[in-house]
Length: 116
Image 1 (tube, rainbow, N blue to C red):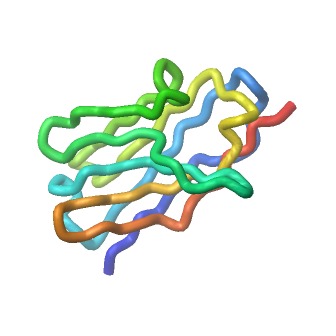
Image 2 (image 1 turned 120 degrees about the vertical axis):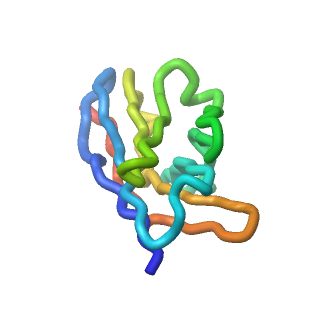
């Protein structure tokens, strides 16, 4: 049974930090590219950051560059998103996504709210 379980969301003040985690099970984690998406109310889901399976190459949306860092621990089947210098516009539900040439899986999402 494939599972992606996100954690680490919450309420944070502008300028603060959060670290999201996504624990994977039920598939060969190391063979999948891992992505973090987010969806704000009334907006489309957007890709925030990605990390490849083989070499761990990373890519970021312009809005995340310089503030967010994606990483993975294949031994723990976990992907992380370190978010610093958070802004109110980062408020969204953040989703973990696993993608290969043949399959794609989604987590249930974790709410991140940036507000004073």
